[in-house]
Image (cartoon, rainbow, N blue to C red; front, side):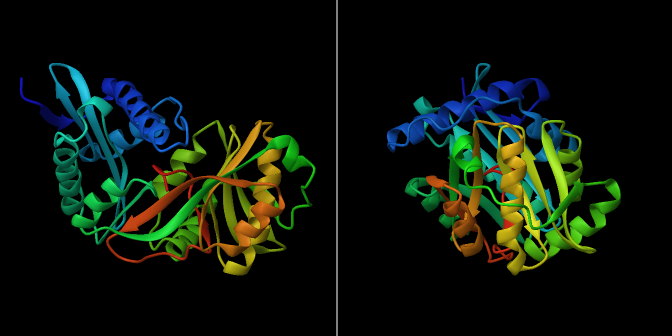
Length: 298
C-alpha cells in the first residue's frame, strides 16, 4: 500500500512519540553519544493538537506509523518541534513529504520567521533545512550536573522569587517580545497548568527582572530576563530552585553566546553533554536574555 500522509489524531500521539524517541536514540548512538531520549507522555503535543491541529502530521503504511511531524506557531514565528522518521525507513522520502506539509502550515499561518533546533552533528538534516531557507544561527549546549555536586557550589539567590500568577502574563509577554520577538502567552498558560513544573517571577526590589521555569526532573527553562546583565544571577537563582526539586541531575539548554550563563554553569560544575543548533529563516531574538526549555518547546 502507498504511504498515507494525514493530520495526526489524539490517540496516535503516544505511538508517534515512541517513534520520535527511538529515532533520536538511533541517531545519537550512531554518533557516539549513547541513547539520549526517554519516552514521555505527549502532553505538549496533545495541547498543541487541540490549539492548532494543522501543525501535527502522521506518515503511515497499513496502520504503522512511519513518520511524525509537529510544528507550532506563536505570532509571526513558526517552530518545527519534531520531524522524525522510523530508522528503517529513513532515506525513502518520508521526511521530505512531512516537511512539505509542515511548511504549508507555516505558509497558512503567515509566519515571517521559520525556526527549529536540530542536532549539531546531523549534517544531513541541516542540509535539508538550508535547502528550505533555514540557516544555522546559534549553537546550543545541553549542560548537566549531578545534584550532589551542585549542592557543594550553590550560592545565595540574588533575586527574590514568587509564583507566577495569571496577572503576571502581560509582563511575561513583554519579556518574550524583547527576547524572542513574539509573545508566547498560550505556552505560559500551558506551563502554569503543568503540575510538574515550578514557575516563578524574578524580582530585584520592586523591579520585575524576569521569569524561570524548573521541571520536577531538574530541567531549567524557559528562563528569560529583561536585560542582559541580569542573566547570570537569574540562572544562579534557577540553579538553586532546581537543586530544591530533589532531582538527581540538573540540566539546562544554554545558547553558545550566553557568556554569563556559561560562566555560572561551569562554576557550578555543569558540563556540556550534547551540542545542538538553532536554525531559522532570519536572525531574531536576544539570546543573552533567553534560555530554551528543550528542542521542541524552545
